[in-house]
Amino acid sequence: MADLSGVRALTFDVFGTVVDWRSSVIGELESFGARRGLETDWGVFADRWRREGYAGGMRLVRDGELPFQTADSLHRRMLDILLAELGAEVDETEAAELNRVWHRLQPWPDSAAGLARLRACYVISTLSNGNVELLVNMAKFGGLPWDCVLSAELTGAFKPEPQCYRRAAELLGCEPPQVMMVAAHQGDLLAAAQTGMRTAFVPRPKEAGPNHPVDLTPDPSFDIVAADFHDLARQLDL
Image (tube, rainbow, N blue to C red; front, side, top):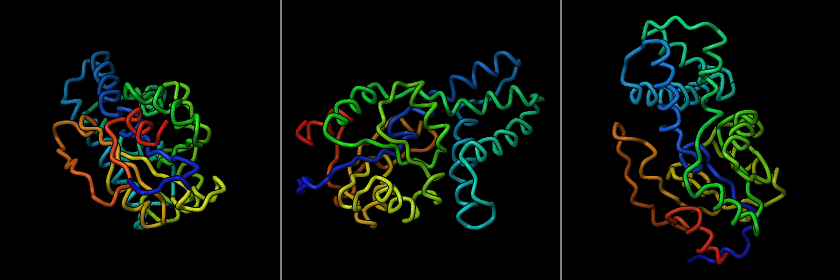
């Protein structure tokens, strides 16, 4: 393993790496559908909400087709489209509450305790495309012990733009090699490495669900490949 003695801070992708967004969202959508008498494939609904609304919305922002906006706004934009396609008439209060499902995502079983273990020796922070309010509420909901909450809302750029990673390191008072990016998404890590950050790949095989198979073969450039956050702590000699 590479010499990681200079690492002072760990920054974490959140959606999929720290929290199980898909199961959490599907569960709330199923409850919503049961209340409203709506039937659809809620797994497909959740996948489209995430991929077309969140990831697709960020691409539109990066391409200049949409102004920079929060993840909450991108999620709501797509939710309105999906509900209209479903023929669901939902008032503003109910739609706003449903959109906040992204604030109530369940952590993976190892997340809270693993983060607490890592926090004993490192500054631990989010580095997410989610907005600050969302990330703070998610931390309160899931008992996630962050030292700091950093997001694209603060860096002014969505991942994988280099500015997001560089500005995060600056905000933590670090040079990029003093920060290790931790993520379940290899593209996130490869982009972080381009700015000089160290990298830890923590695959979450169940994250994407059956509709979108993901190649979990780790890129050989990653500094650490860990089964979960406890394994990450072990590899960092904690």
